[in-house]
Length: 603
Image (tube, rainbow, N blue to C red):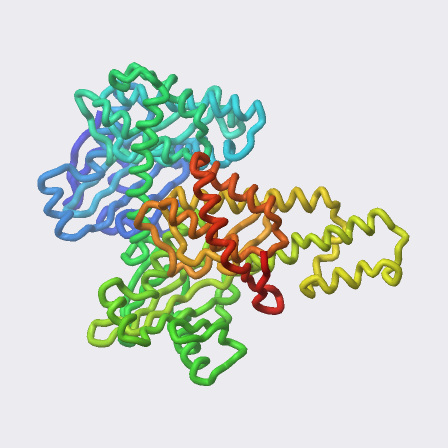
C-alpha cells in the first residue's frame, strides 16, 4: 500500500511504513542534504546521480536513491504528457513484484516540476550479472566451471521467459541491468541464487509479447554476454527459454542465426553511438573554446595542462628542439612532453597541418585530420582495441575553416614496435646458437664464438634470461604470438574496422601475463564505415606481410593466415586471398624498421 502527499510543494508517493523518508530528503536540494551522511556514489552523469546508503532506521537492508537532475524545457514539456522516469520505475516495480518477478522494492518517489527522486530498497548480497559472468566464465574453463555456467544460463533463460510470459518487455535488457543475488555474504553458488530485474524506466507492460520483441530481448542478452557465450551455450539457452515461444520456427540453429543477426545490428548501433560521444558533453568527455580554438577533451585531467602542452609543442617546433621533436614533415609534427598527473608519465602532441589547397578542401568537406584521429582513437577503444589514450583535440580555425588540429595522447610505454619486437624475441640465428650451446656446453666464447655472434644479430642485446629459454619455449611463444595477433586482426575486421596503413611499425607489442597486447598507432588512417571486402583484407594482409622481418618463415606466415581466416570464418576464401597476397608481395621487397633504422630484405 502507498499514500500520496504534498510536502513543501513536492508531491510524494510513499510506501506504507516509510513516511519518514519525506523528512530526510529534499528533492530541490538533494545533494547538499547528503552532507555528513554515509553514502556511496554509484553513478554520476549529467542526467542523474545514483547513490547507495547502507542499512539505517529507514530500511535495515539499506536504500538505493536515483536523483534525476533538472532537464531542459524539452523534458519539462515531455513530462506534461508522459509519466516521468521515476513514475515509470515506481509503477513497473510494483507490477513486477505483484507477479512474483524479482526487483528492488520501491519505497518512495517525489515529483516536482523537473526534479525527480526515486528511493528503493537495496538488493543485498548481489552483484551485476555481467560483471559476475565476465569475472568467472571468460576463457578456458574447467569442467566444474562449465557446469556452473550452464546452470546460470538456464536460470537466466527461464527468468527472461517468465518476464515475457507475464507481459513485460525491457527495451534495455542487458546483463548489466540484471542482478544476481546470493543467499549470504559467504555464498557465491549459482545453484541457489536469484535474479533481479533493474533499471525499469525502459520497461513496458504489454498485453502480449510478440515474436520480434522476444527476439530483440534475446539478442540484447547475447550481445551483453558475447565474451562468454559459445555456439553450444546459445543453443542451450534457446532450449531452456523454449523454442516453441519464438514463433513457428522449430529449427533451433535457425533461431540462433536470427538472434545473432539482430545482435550484430544492436552491437553496430551501440558502437556507432558510443564513438560519437567524444564530440559531445557526457560523463567522460567535454568541450569548450580556448584562445580561438575549439577543444574537445577527456574529463578527469587538468585542462590547463592541455593548453600548456600546445604552447610547448609550438615552441619546440620554432626552436627546432630535437630532444622533444619525434617527427616533422609537411603533414604532421609530433613532440613528446612530460605530463604532471598521477596516472600519466609522458604524452605526445600530434599536429596535423593543412599545408596545401587540396588538404584544405578535404578539411572543409570531410573534417580535419585531427578530428578523424580523435574519433578513431576513441572509437577503437570502444570496440576493445588498444590505442594510446586520446586526451584532447584542439582545432584552430580561420573564418570557420580548420587550418591546424592537434591531438594530445598518452605515450605508449613498456612496448616495442612489432617489427623490432620480432627481431628481439624471435631471432632464428639466436635459436640456432642456443642449440649449439646446449649440444656443446663446455665450448668457450673463443672456441665457438656464440656470444659474439649473438651480439651481432641486428646488434640487439636480448634479455639475459632469453638465452636460457629452451628452444621449445621459444617456438611456443612464437606460436602464441602469431595466434594472438591473427585473432586481434580478425576481430578488427569482423567489426568492419579498416586501417589504411597497417604496417608492423604502426603496431606496438607488450607482453602481459604470458599474453600479448597490441596497440595501434596512426589511427587517423582508421575507417569504421564500410564492409571489409576481400580486397581490403588482402591489402592489410599484404601490408603486414611486407613489413614483417624474414625471421618469420613462410610456415609462420601460413599459420598466421590460417588462424586469421578461421577467426573471420572465411576459410572458403583461403585460396583466393593467399594467391592475391603472394602476387602482390612477390613484386615488392620486405621493408621494416630495425633498431638501427630501415632495413630492406629480398624474399
